[in-house]
Amino acid sequence: MKKFLFTLLIAIVLSSCSEYQKAIKSEDVAVKFDMATKQYEKGNYSKAIRLFEQIAPTYRGKPQAEKMFYMFAQSYYKTKQYYLAGYQFESFASGYPKSEKVQEASYLGAKSYSMLSPVYSLDQTDTNKAIDKLQAFIDTYPNSEYLGEANITVKGLREKLEKKAFENAKEYNKISDYQSAIVALDNFISDYPGTPFKEKALFYKFDSTYQLAINSVPSKKADRLNTAKTAHSSLIKFNPNTEYKQKADEMLARIDKDLQQFSK
Image (cartoon, rainbow, N blue to C red):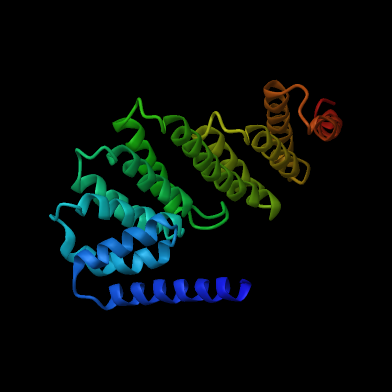
């Protein structure tokens, strides 16, 4: 009995493969469409894509074209081919503006670009593109069921850009280019006033002014020490219980001690 069932299963699989191969080789677009739909519904998206790619160039304008292009875009998305998915969803949205799927397609098209966003340390061209696409979706569909998710995604992408900008500014501090660090961190704080990295930026600005001051030539030291005191005040004003408080207070004590020589 088990042998019979195994043999039957093999026969079904072979038959299915044979039908798929016949559809691939067929010149009948209806045969290809039917087989692609079956593969799509089974979750065999890669197989479906192969058939969709064959019929897509000539399928627009046909009665089932809207369904086909939606499945085509979804198949790319399901197989994580996000560049192609983004393109296909955008093409669907522009080609079928009255479709009941247009809002979903517009959202998934924008989301596809967000899936291409790399880690913060790499080039962020795709991140900026994703933000633009998602913001356009939010503006077009302010009452969409996808609005909450879209806003969360945009927030995460913007924080990634902020992290990159912060790390770039902080790098000047790490390589002891303190004057450049001060300028870069000031620009970062100005450009991203609500950033979650503000406390860190304020500390590294303070550290940069401190390092510049204590290693300064005598003629510039007093002014630079006072500038460092101001940077310390900005940090403590922002968060009196900052995680850097102990270290910052130790640095402040050194600043006050060095300033004493200028009060005599």
